[in-house]
Length: 262
Ligand code: FPP
Image (tube, rainbow, N blue to C red):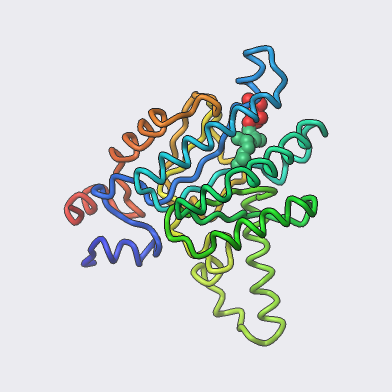
């Protein structure tokens, strides 16, 4: 088969950039883990770790915008995190609300588009309204595409896309044979963004934990022991360096990619 970087993209991962030369990831997805341990190491309540984690969020957002990363997706609260102690959940909700209140205008001035992915029906009305308002304010911004995954789960995402397709079939608008990976992908969260090039998980665990299950199919995975509140610009640069040394193959052999890609 004759192929080119373009055909690699079309054949396997239509929205991915495919090349060793693309050394900076276009889309970075992060599981921000280790807040609780950071606090416990300092004999502080776990919630102090979440508060400190907001500082790391700010650093990473600013640094990604500065470096020209197109999209950043942060896992802030999984659909399983409701199982945590009530007080911890309530501090997290308060942090989401206060951070949105404090940071939205600044993000907007910096051309950042903010969106929240996940099932937001479980959140309090005040928080939902803030999320809606932040999305509305920033929706036309073309700078960093910042997505916060809140009450999000990768399985939920796939199921809600499947439900949308099933509803279209029931309405007679879609025939089942026309259901393809590409069509399902169009109904997932972040359908308009390139799929993540780089997944980072802080805190030393090596799991995806029901994050963007579909979207991570060809993503490069990077795990670091650094606890989230300590993850900063230099830790992010180390992840970028590691990514730049990877060869992305999308199913081809290493030799094929080395021959064809710049
Ligand atoms: C995981 O660490 C972290 C979370 C479940 C919450 C992440 C939230 C923030 C970083 C703060 C607010 C975010 C935004 C976007 C405003 P963990 O508690 O599981 O840590 P552990 O594994 O050490 O217990």
